[in-house]
Image (cartoon, rainbow, N blue to C red):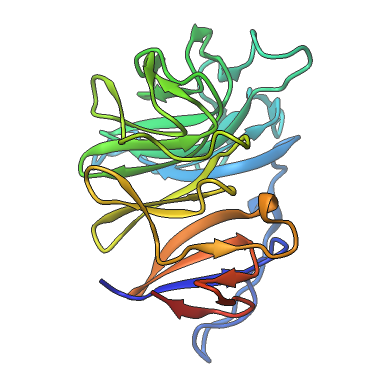
Length: 278
């Protein structure tokens, strides 16, 4: 297995102007030169509605908003390079707490469809449980969905893996992580998280062919071995106030897995810089 590395961050940063090569220069263009959305964006992905067909690839953004430029767009919108488009009636939250605004936290392309997930219970007016798919014409549910908020998704071995704060998927017990095989929901072992705190899986990744999940205190960083979850090394720590530990993102970089979030020790050693741990 390749190395696993950790990175400590306490704020969001943007990389833009540092050139990868001496001949290359980069700069930011706000909203691609046009007005963007009127709220927060938490997720974005590219999606080609007809695969290798003649239609252009779309940039899809999801979050908590009601307009994309002047186009009504409920928490999700697509940019075709020229203008913004809504995706049907978009995403809604009818049965959530009063005043709650539907929020899209994660998006991914699965079996050719655009799958969106987050905190909502309606998609195109249809009842869904925090997750729905858009085939280019209409919205549909994935079974009965989840009973809580979905924060992350990844495709692993042909299955759609989702993570969040939920405790059941499709009516089956699934603590904070579950898999959709295209027809039904299934748990992954006994799930993740503790019974003491309200834990959440915040990030999922595939590293060297293995599924890795990361999140808050009781989740930490764990790897799925096919039958159960195992802590990666001795995990990550936050010495100041352990329950506030949160691993917010994972990505494979070369032969290493990089984790970033709110922690200050990795494998028992200070983790203020990028460094390998076992």
